[in-house]
Length: 426
Figure 1 (tube, helix red, strand yellow):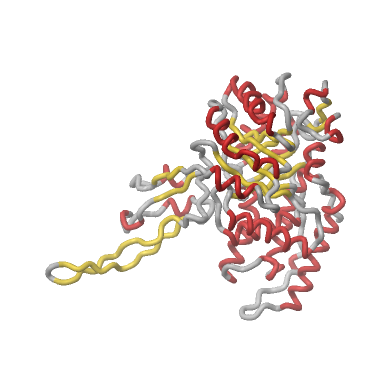
Figure 2 (figure 1 turned 180 degrees about the vertical axis):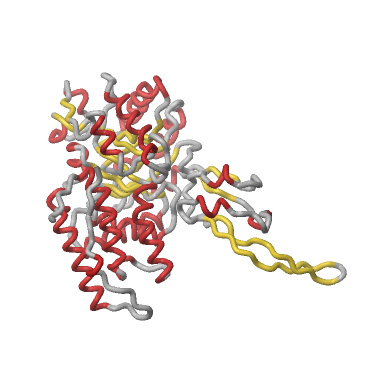
């Protein structure tokens, strides 16, 4: 059951139009610090690798294709204060900059250890690496625009405009729709695709460039990479892994994300590990991707990731490395893991061969499931606050409006706390 971090509404300052009320902000920022302190974040959070060992690792997924730098920065700030161990983002320099800026802004408010910064790439076509596309001028004016309504990222915006066309006998003014997909906000969930009554929406797939990725990995503010692969064929993974070359030597963690593909899944994971092992200088992690980009839909979305974990738990010849859930994860994931007896359950290694990818301090025993990654659901519960702030103040830093930061942080702590087992003071 999710923890509930409540805020006394009477302590929140009322919004004043015009200049920022810095005196009120200073008082409200102190409330943010007190919330972090009373929740016990600093006493619970540990080094990310230790969180994996204990089974209370939490990763924020900003989105492999989500490239709104303002939201990414603000999400990173909020979830750093909430104590996440890792922030996963698009493999783009501007997005990496936004994540790191958000982390540092959070640590200026409350000094906490830094979460790892991870970039996500793909070895072939993958649902996480696509964008919706359509020409709004092809849309009928009387369309009910279900694409706008269903988009969880507010990435589709349509407005009616007048367009003047030159004709041989003069000019003609027509009403047309303008706008369309806000590319940087679209993260490829695909929900708009089936609801378009005129079949106008297309999905554009793309693959991250290996050379550009290798350069990003050499930065001193990128700690990890996640490679999304289909799992059925390992040749694309091998090709990307080889193209990355020695750039992985700069990392603390290499993660591989894949869906459950039936009986061949474990065999594929072991094959992939064999490919990585000769040039794997750091920890490795397997992201068990249940139902991609669906955690915000409802309670049942998390079932597939939990089922994947249960299948893995029953296998004797497990791939080496840590395991983490993703894909459909939400506020009900921990409850589901507990029902399966998989939440922070310790796995004792039977021989040293199983531990070659782990430091000696982590090798004797560790949690079977290292933790949980939250994407759509994590963005949804904080995004509501960010959206409200944006409508009132425009594109701003959330710490400049700490009444919004306080609410966003309470929502984030409510989620992260289910894994970290925070014990808020009453």
